[in-house]
Amino acid sequence: MTRTSKNRITRKIVLSVILFASSVIMLYPLVYMLLGALADNDQMYLNASFLPKPYFTADRIKNFTIVFEADDFTQSIFITFARIGFYAVINVLFSTMAGYIFSKMEFKGKKIVFLYLMSSMMIPGVAVMVPSYILLNRFPLVGGNDILGAGGMGFRDNPAVLFVTGWVPVYNMFLMRQSFNSFGSEMKEAAMVDGANHFLIMFVIYMPLALPCLAVMLIGMVIGFWNDYMTCLIYLPDLKGWHTIGTKIIDIIDLYGAGGNGVPYYSRIYGISFMFILPPIVVFLIFQRFFISGLAMGAVKG
Image 1 (cartoon, one colour):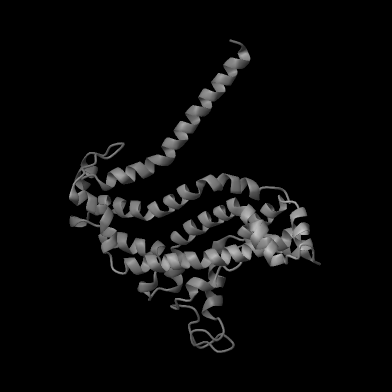
Image 2: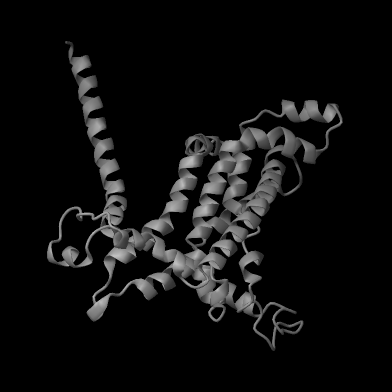
């Protein structure tokens, strides 16, 4: 066996070990959570181990299903899915149109506008949290405010706040622009010769070719809205019935997360948490075959 062959085999072995170790590190918290939900809570304190010992009994299975018994849980799920569906339509429409405009159309100031939008991605979300709160609280003619934004509460404790922000998804626009850049302009020119307008070209010709990028957008959007904790906490403090699942799940854990004598009921916490993270995992598994190709498509130089 030549030295080159030995080096190649060594690299493959090292790569396999690294991939296996990475998989174990990523999956360990999920496996521990699943087994911990099925374990005896007292034994987890007395005999801590690398993996808890599960017991498949009706009482342990209830740790997974008890989340469905919480007040307003069904309503919270409905509101969350309604929000995801609403923003899915908004994101697809705005991102597709903006991506097409910045990729296939020419107008004065195009690069300046695009760079301005990209610069907004450099500002951390936490830096605009307080200004956004003030803006929405002082929004004119909403929540009792006058034309100058005074006298009322604006969008505070107003369910409409769940649907009025995030209409300009800059990152998704960038992905779609990069995706459209990878397609030649010949299709657009041929379609225009046949009498197609811009809307027909962008939604019927180009958008189906960008399905991998759309999958990346949907995965990020679903996970983002599913895990959204701050919006309801900040803007809907008194409307518990309108809290989305990202905020509601914390209330449920607080409600069921303590056992007797002040000892945290970790088995129940693990069961509730496992049920909470299960839907995003399912979404990712469904769209994973598009995910890598979508990121690669969005990385094409414009």
